[in-house]
Amino acid sequence: MSTKSYGRIHEPLMARIQANRRDPSKAVAFLGQQLCFLERDSVVPPVGTAVEVMITRAVYGKNEFGHPNYRSLQALMIDVIDPERHMLVAIDGFECSGSMCRTTAYGRETDGSRLLTSDDVHPRKLTGESTSAWSDRSRGSMWLTPGRTDIFVADNVNARFGESRPTRPTNVWVQRAEYVEKSGCGVRVAGLTRVEDGDWAKLVRGASGNLQ
Image (cartoon, rainbow, N blue to C red; front, side, top):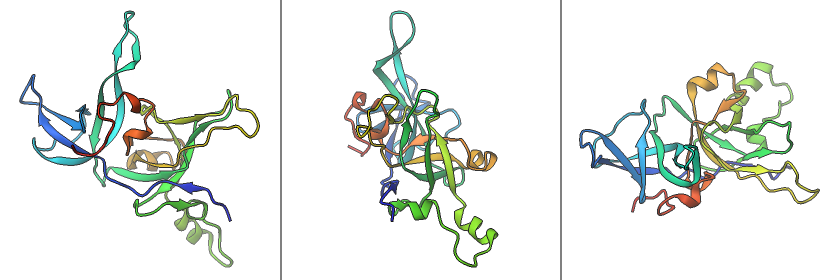
């Protein structure tokens, strides 16, 4: 039996909503000590509340030539979780294994209560089971791409035999509408569930997704 695992036990990423000091009519948020901005199409919760969010992307500083300085993290962009719009997906982790290969991960929708196994993600057709019944049990599985998140990717393009970097199983958020539109093929990650999963994680102030 395969020992490959998908996802993690889900712990909600909670952000504190606060008034913007520069413009009190607008809201900002904090993950620990890290400043965050809400995406334009995000719900804006009341100031003083704590809400579950996803990290959609990093906002970097600029270098002297006006290009992104990936060593300077200015803020994180977040979106408030809406179960009607968003799906929690357990993945095996992203990997790029060749210069001509696409960076992908595979996963399945999860409630986050446990790790998923290969049998959960790739259910086998049972003896005597109809194709439609098997398809129903397989619903929720998908191929994913990183989107704009800068999620950790195991770079094994030039890895020697037996020295490949391991992938990082985790949970991510995707847009339900995109999953349906693309029939589960090439669905972009909409947001991360953990600070630790971003390539920018070491730049985050406080480096914690918990309320402090």
